[in-house]
Length: 193
Image (cartoon, rainbow, N blue to C red; front, top):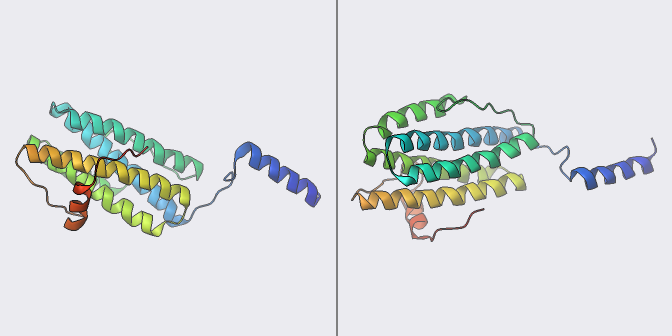
């Protein structure tokens, strides 16, 4: 095949299939996508469990939002050929996240205050991990999706903190710094998507 034919086929491929037809990402970026898919699933699954126990719209509403977050990461996984398993609710491939889910489920089912604290803690963890990955991953498309997820997690964090405030309870962050939490709480609700 001549160089001209190769060039023409390349241009046709780009026009029909987009620039990233054979896009590659690093091993660590693949791991971050796999992990973030399961972390978004953890949030979704936990809020689904809590929405069945407590008649408070925040759990159902944010669970729906987490479904969308999962789909954003899943789309990247499909594009970059990252294998993920779609396990049933409460089942995770990552043993650390499985342990976190099991612990949070026990705590969250104790009472509504604990459930709201678990909600804030999940968003706390999400914000911490997304920030870490955004500082290390270099793929622009992945970073753009993580930025959207981070924006959503900040909105969710503010919502859980508001609910805790109504219950005259405060939240102490476990993953992000207290200054980071205060900055998030002073920001306005953002349109993320």
